[in-house]
Length: 111
Length: 160
Image (cartoon, rainbow over all chains, first blue to last red; front, side, top):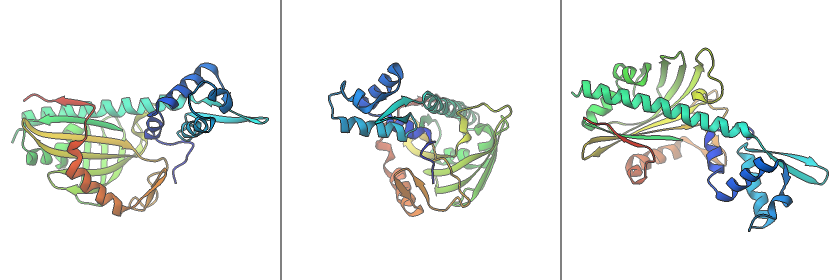
């Protein structure tokens, strides 16, 4: 079974595909840990919808939550974004390099 | 997920040969490739940077489509830290005709953490869905047949 606390890069990008989730992440990274209630005031969607988005971001490992009394506060895990972009950059650069070499190989050996 | 597309000035058979022949693949893939192009067959890849990978060929549609999975056995020294191809990943090659030659689309995507399990061909779970080898077969046929309709974000054309 995959570990939900450490999903692959694709999970991160899936979670970021939604504009509301990107805004939530942006706000949380600027203002620090906030509760779903704090966050919901700034959004044209219900508190339930915000909570659902927070759940998706958490599932991708982008947020961690902590209980403070009655409230659950959400904070950003910045390393997760870094890991995902590092994977994309590294794997992408490898394939760029390989495909250049393949094109050269076929120019030199067309038959 | 990484996707790259390139148009190469050769026919599909020549491209397939360059992609799958171990000696030719060793030349351009950046290391030594040991594999036999056969579904279920193991593969080994010794990257020039010291990375050693093992994997398995999953789907072969000769001249059109190849899918394999690979995972790092030994990371390069010193470790490059976070990122890199340390996770298990799935790679697909798709070959299609193009007016300037043959179009190759390569995709690599990270597989869920925890893969590979003891048995690489066992059923494994993607978050929210169970992927059996049966559904993979249907997926491969769909990819090989209709993938051309998808847009490719990163596209380069190799000049002749």
